[in-house]
Image 1 (spheres, rainbow, N blue to C red):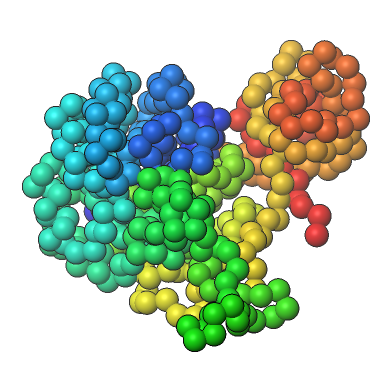
Image 2: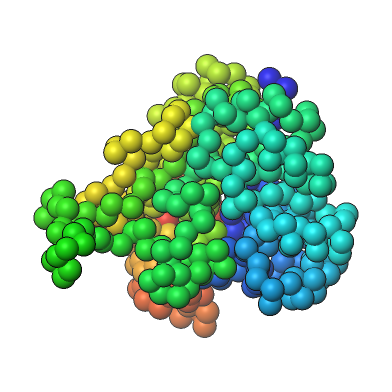
Length: 410
């Protein structure tokens, strides 16, 4: 086993970046306020990027910045200025799909690695070689590739060139994410970072000679969602992923919460480390991985294209909603001199509740909320206001960066 894979985790703000770092990421990918494909994500100001990069680098974790829009003429002058600003804060790589953006980045900040986004439709080894000759260090494989195809790419590209592939998260219904539905329906271009996810909407069929007659394709009384893919999950196939020669195992989800990122990062971190220690240990812990990965939001799971072309079983026909088994309460920011945990509360809970402490090392500890205080040191029974600062007296003391969650009532 010659290649030790990187675990690459998304973050949409500074809190989530820190969570990704603490919970096991080898690298984190983030977007700035411009030129990324997640315009609706909160994203990072330059100052927040700087802080995030410093936090990650102090802990030996890399940070990659996305600039993977398909650029129009009006974008180019701004891109030059943006890359100049990034040059000063020293991310480890830029993720780019557009050849024009690639050329500007090579000119402005040649010392920063460039990784070619999945958006560039990277489906064969000649494409990899093409980007390598231009100076790209890494190419992100198209989601439409099988493990067999990725293995063939590995054999036909330079040994030092890196392959990055998605192993977990939402699947796009369009080829390599290049979708026009959002632009057509809402005027918000997916390739400019403003996708409205129309693939999750409810559709009917219309026959061209019968305009106005909508023919629902009912699977049950709730309707049908014919473009709605299940989520990718490869937790049961880490050996196959690594043996294919993939260098970076990528988690999708720059719109997700700190709880989602912590849950997925922690689970894949343990699975990868266990397998690298021994396949027996990895197999022995499989039920734990599967149970943990199911505790974050998801839309049922599929292995995507990795073992061949998907069939009708990779779609969800009866719902466009997530399964959500746990609710995020907050991340412990500090422990004060009383031993109370300070959090910025994200969902309501109350004194007397049993909640769960989620630790970076994989432990989950049930604790009771003995008391709760607001930022004026007044005792309160609950924290009803989102993002309220509260201090918690818990029956089991947590530590900084622990995440508090509670099982969602069904």
